[in-house]
Length: 423
Image 1 (cartoon, rainbow, N blue to C red):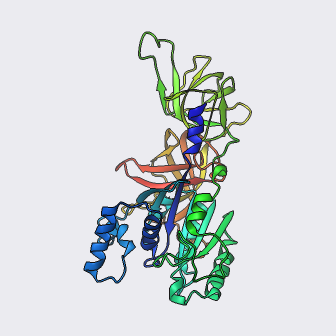
Image 2: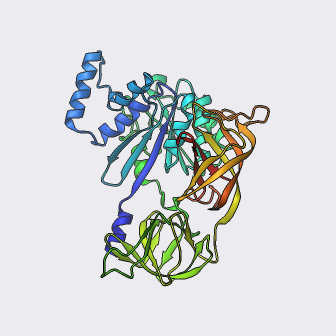
Image 3: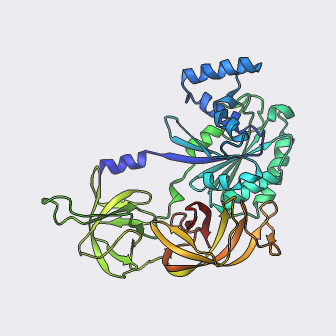
C-alpha cells in the first residue's frame, strides 16, 4: 500500500489568477515565484538585466511572466499560460488567464480544472465589472475557494477603510453566487506585502499571507467520493501467452471508491459482475478512488469498450438522451446553430448531438437573463437543451465536475466550439 500513500502525498493545488488589465497579475505571480525561491538564478539575472534596460528602478517581477503576455497583446496567442512551482508543503500549477472581456473562453479553460481562484482587485478602482465577471465564472465552474487579493495597497497608503469597502462590495455581489469559501487579503505585489511574507505596513490585518493560504487550503473534498464512476478509456487485451486470460479496463476514476470484491454494473449493457483486481504500474491495490488512473479486471467476461462506464448497481448516474447545460461558446468563426449536428465528448464517450433550444443567455456582468437575443456567439454563456444520439451517463456538474461536463466539437472543422456544465 506504500505507493497509494505516495499518491496522497503528492499534494497538488491548481489555481487560476484573474483580474483586469494592469491589476498586477504578472507582478503577483512573479512575486510568488521569486519570494518562494521558485525561479532559477539565470532567469532572475535576465529579469534584472531587462529591468535595467527598461529604466525600472526596482526589479520588475512582471517580466518573469510577461514573455507570453507581449505575444498575447500582439494577437499572436491569447492562450492560457500554465506555470509550475513548488514549496516544501505543496506543488502548484498556476493557470494565468487574460483579463480582457474578449477572453472569457480562456478564463473558462483555465478555471475548469482549478481548485482555487485568485481574483485581483486594484485598491484604487475597487470592484469593477470584470471583478464580478471573474467571480461569476469561478462560481459557474464550481471553484470551491476564491481568494480576493486587494492589490496596490501601497498606492492607497495601506488604508484599512479602502480594503474594508472593497471587501463589503465584493461580499455583496458574491452573496448571489454559489461560492462556499471566500477569503480577502490586502497585498502589494510590487513590494511583497502579505504575498509570501507578512507586511509591517498593515498591522490592522490579522489574517494569513497569500502563500500560507495556498499551502494550507483544504482541497480533499473536491472530488466526489460517494458516487462510483469509472469511464472506460482503454480495453487491455492479452499480449502474450502467459497473460492469455488477462482482460482489463483502463481509465481514470471519476468518482467514488472501487474495492476488490465490489459488485459493479456496466453501462450501457446493464450486465453485473464483481471486481477481481485493481492494477497500477506500481502493483496491485485493494481500492481506487478519484482521481486515480488504474486498470480494473472483472470476474466475468463482459463486452465492455471505450466510452462505457463501470458504476455501482445501487447508485447509477442518470442515463439520458436529453441534456440541459450552461455552455460557454468558444468559436470566433461560427455561432451556435439550432438543429446543426455537433459531436459531444463526455468523459470517454463520444456521441452526435443537436441543440434543440437556447433557453437564455447570461449577462455575466450583472447576472441578468437575456431572453430577447438568443444568438450564441464567442464568449457567450447560455443555457441550452441538447438531444444526443445515444444515452450519456451523467451527473449534474454540481455533483461531479468530471461526469457533469462535456465539450462540443464542430464536425466540419474538428474545432472545439463550446464547453458545457450539465444542470
